[in-house]
Length: 338
DNA sequence: CCTAACCA
DNA sequence: TGGTTAGGG
Image (tube, rainbow, N blue to C red; front, side, top):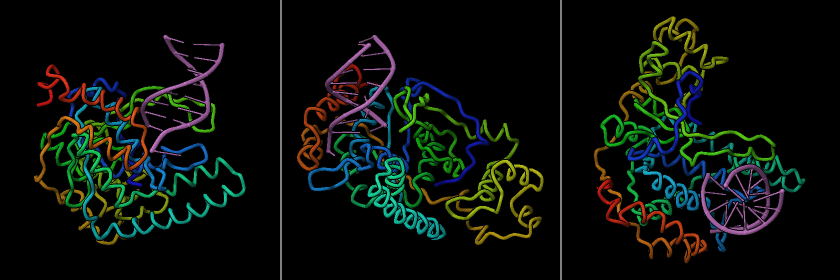
């Protein structure tokens, strides 16, 4: 998913505390997908309520956002709108990959291949309309603002950071840099060691921040050239050129100036090149949003999570206690929020 | 992913 | 107390 330019970019590890009082525009699709693929049992089954509805995304939102707000972060969720027409190949491909992964998951499960089963279970994850609606409801009840993008969520989030309404984009992908995001934060979790599944390896997962300006300066290129490099490697809107990874793409774009000259040199072509380049530079965005963090509606959250989706009332109340304590629950913290 | 419980 | 892991829904 996204574009594979991460190796070219500068990353700075930080503590979550460093994001205190920062507004982070979280890429909703990216985050929900992450929750769905990772919040699973050992056999690969996602969390479900008694009626069989998947609830991994709701669990992720409740606990992750509670942690972020406790750390002083001011999160916003940014949802996708209508994707551009030239994304249809990528979307079709994702659908295909999901279908085949679902079948392979069944096979592996039947054969008792646990590791395989888990891998394919993850790849079968799908963010459904219903999950998005559920997530929006939960955010509203938790008092956390969200924005509905006219088109790509990452484009909208990038615009909000450019405008100064947010400080960072929260996403694991690098696409927002193509849309001009000044700052991105990855690994937006509570800091700590994490055990790799099925392996005896522990890795330090720390939030890391990336600055577009710093990376462009380091590489000695412009944002348009970064877009061109990404398009050589492949984006959601085009398949990459054969045998061209980020390193060679960087070299080629530096050498020839832009992707047009690179394509001419290689005798290749990318469909709708101009429209796609322009979409990255000038994506559809909106100013129609309001960012307000308000006191959570405890009864509403309990009703949605516990009554409708079988969450433990005890656990949800504990999370809400923490949320309230840091978000308009006490006068002392009110000032920093409003 | 995250929490909670368990054990050294 | 902190590392580890089962269980969450």
